[in-house]
Length: 248
Image (cartoon, rainbow, N blue to C red):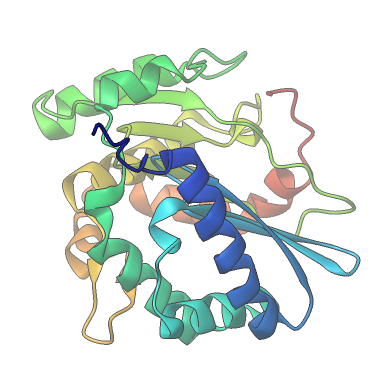
């Protein structure tokens, strides 16, 4: 007699089951209601927010089967920003990078809106000239003004530039696109971010991620206006902190 074989559960149904289990595991550690959304992002592995009595977490699917120590670290990081917990999570993500969907830098850049031409400073021209002068045009990256983070009240700090090793994109804070900001200062910030393409982040002896290795900081001093750029930053930081930006 013909007999129907059992049908394997659909992948989406399995994910829903594992997600519910994960919510229960986190609920005991966060001591509150938990709603988990599972994603397959290629860059940000976890985000969270508190909505009254509810914790909302967006987690990469690698966390579905995470061991207890990782979930405890996740709870400690979410509740109080624990530095040791953050380091443990970084190590876990690094060990499980095989589960992160791989996209080429070109594919990632297609998803981005690149706006290198500012009103006062053209980042594309600055990048090309620095690339030729200091790197024999061997840096293969893209550059753009990034979005200005929304802040309430006076800005207390400013991240003037960043570099993504995954997409190979340099982002410069739009506060630098002002007539009072000298070109050599913008060049210094761009040069610093280009060095991140050469000197990649690594783990220190304590297991923490080091994004500014000593050789990067030493190489940065070769910038032709290094001392003048440092002095301008010390004297004019308030100008950047108070800048109103229109970049989105």
